[in-house]
Length: 115
Image (cartoon, rainbow, N blue to C red; front, side, top):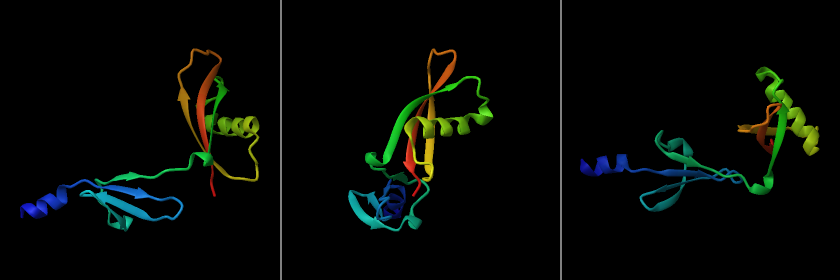
């Protein structure tokens, strides 16, 4: 019984290779190819994006833009300022950073091609 309890209480890390779409599990000092559908809710999941595939920048948006229009305003500004191809669908995420600027909000933006 103690053996079964020990098996149920070990932690595991599940890594997902975004290129091959294969998953691997690290548990009990072993790495194995893994069927992600068999993972536990308590598993820790990790993946990565190659840094060459990520565009990052800092942009300013007027504080007068309503919160409901913020996402669209950021997207328009990113396409314009970074010269992104409008024929390509990008995933754009952003985080507001603290600033003393009373006229503009400052955002760190991260952009990847949504292949």
